[in-house]
Length: 289
Image (cartoon, rainbow, N blue to C red; front, side, top):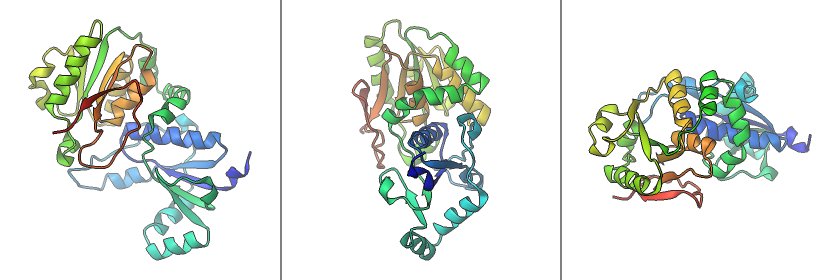
């Protein structure tokens, strides 16, 4: 094992299931490079105590042992998280080379400290594709997800994902024109096109004319079981209108084949900085007002 193993990295897992998969993919990428990496799931306990209409309380969807990771030690998590709450302690520990923080933009192996707190979303589709086999084998530890991967994909089957709730508060919800243009594209370019809608806002979605031809509109549940059920159903489709959600994007990247068409919003977000690395094969639909 290379000297990388001397640097301990504690990866903080945050956000919904899509984000969790990107973070675990990044952790495995670093593990394969020889880094001593563990997983910190403590943010989910804090998430339950937050009362904020712009933030959905999240839960860890699958145990980290499914991905062959171990939880960061209590002392390590307490030390790293408390140090970053106190600016003076943070500056001191960084200066003497004891702790460091890794985020989406600053990873540099030559600047790693003895203990490192890793916080970010790591939303790089290329990285997730490179870790695809690892993720699929890990997810198959759950029977329902294993069944989702094993089901035969029906030609022309398409997921249309409509995320609203917190996105409405954040003003990042996709407007109806995005869905009209996406479905129009699918009708013209996908043979045997048929679609199902997955949404966290059933009432709004069911009342939109653009979705009237959907085979089914699924009312997504944010519980752990509901999340697994939704993700499993998304997996056995050929095409995806993911919009600007990493949840449906992860399903698309894990199940796409050579015939798949993946449609994303451009820009990914209108009002906040989140730049997704776009694949050349993706279809971009305007997300500007």
